[in-house]
Length: 285
Length: 285
Image 1 (spheres, rainbow over the protein chains, first blue to last red):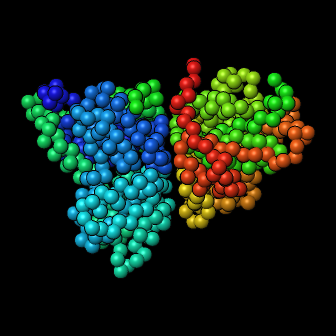
Image 2 (cartoon, each protein chain N blue to C red):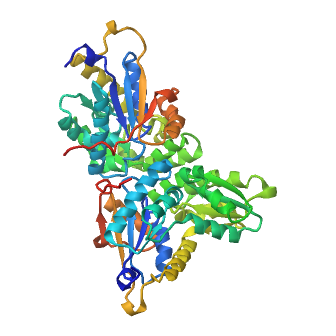
Image 3 (tube, one colour):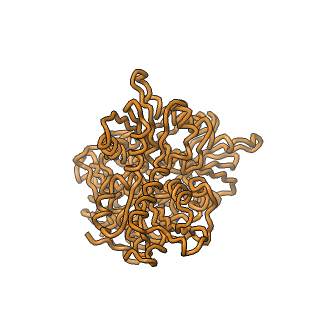
C-alpha cells in the first residue's frame, strides 16, 4: 500500500542504544521533512560482544515493535545488527524496505580507497562475523584489516570522547594497523555507530592522510534513493512542517536523555521518549 | 529438606558475566570440597547501566534457572544485582538461602575504617541505588563517597587490567575522592566484582595508605557461616574429592572461556560449560 497514508508514516531507526543516533542525525539532515521513530534496545546493549544468533533474535523483536507502531521503512543503524540480522529481517518483513549500515559503508570505503588496503574499526561481533570484509571484497579486490575496538563503545557511552585517555585507547587499537608502512591502509571505516563522537582521537591516531569513512552519511543517501524508488518519500503537499522525532527505549530513559544528545548532536525532548518492553512481544519462528 | 541429598547439591553463583568469577575464586578457596554451579547472564550484560527494575527481573530469571537445576544456596556475586534484587529473590525463593555481596562488603569496610570516611567504587546502577551507602551507615555513622566507574567493567572485560591506560582511567575516577586531604577516605570498597583484576591500578591511584576492601573474601566467610548454621555444608563422609565447577552462560561461550580465567584465576574447562536461554523461562509475577 504505497498510498498517501503509508508515505505519511515515520521511518523506523533501530540500534542497541544511543550509537544509532549518529545515523539518525545524518538521516534528518538529508530528509528533514520525514518523521522518524527511533528505538534503542538499551536494556540489552551492547550487542557488539554478543553472538550473531542472539543479536538476530533481538533485532527481530525490535523491528517487530517498530512495525507494530507503523513505519514505512526501517534503518538498522547498528553495524552489529546489520551484520547479524539483515537477511532474517528482510525475510520476516518482506514488504518492508530495510537497509543496514554496512553495505553503504563498504561502498563509501571502496570509493575512497586508492591503494586497495582498507582498515575497519568495529565491535568484536562485527569483526568476527566478517561482514565488512565480505561487503568490501564483493565490490573490488582489496585487503581489509579489521580491528575490534570494544572499549570505544564504553568510552562513548561514558561521554569520554576527547582527551588523553581516549587518545591512548585510539593509539592502542589503531597504530598496529599502520605498522607496515610499505602497504598501510589509506582508508579507515568507522564500523560502529558509537564511534563518530570519538573522531578527533581516531584521526590523531590514524594520521591526517587517511580518509575516515563514517557510514551514516552514505546510509542516508541510500535511504533517500530507496524511498524515492518506492515512491515512499514524504509528499510536499503534506505541508512543510519539519519532521518529528519520537524515541523508544527498553531501559534507562534518564541515561538516554543524558548521553543521547552527544550522539544526535541535538537536544532530546523528554515528552517524545517512551519506554517499551521487547521481551513481552512474542516472535514466532 | 536439609538431608544428605540437599547437602550434596552444588552452591549456585550468579553474575551478569565474568565478574562474579572473582567471588567464585574466593568461595572455592574457603570451601574447597563444595560443588559450584556458576551462571553468567552474558547475553544481557552489563547490568550496571540498567535500571533496578530490569535487573531485578533478570535476577529472578537467573536464580529460577539455578533452582531448576538444583542448588542448596545461591550467592548473588554481582553488586548491581545484589542491590536491586536481593529482597525480591528472598521473597520468591523463601526456602533457599540467598546472600549478596553488598552486606559483606559493607561489614568489611566498617571494620577497616578508622576515620569513618569510606569510598565506594561501583557501577552506575549500584551508586544510584545507594545500597552501599545504606548498608554502611546502617552499621555505623560514616561518610560514604561513592563513584560510578563504568569504564572499569569494559576494561576488565577487554582484559586490559594493567598499564598506562588503566592507570589513567583509575586516576580520573579515584583522584577526586581524595581531593579534600583534610578528610580523605581511609578505606576504598571495590563495589563491583569486575574490579579486582584492576587492583594494581586502583591501588596506585588511591595511594598505599588506603585499605582496599574486596567483598569476595568476606562474602565467602558469610556463606560459610550461613551453610554451617543451616547444616548445609558438604559432609566429610561424602568423600574428599575436590569440589567440581560447572558453568552456565546465556551467550558467548568462546568469550567466556577466553576472559573468564582472568577473573577466576584458574583455567575453565570447555566440557563443564553449557549455554542456556533465560528468556525461554517464564517467571510468574
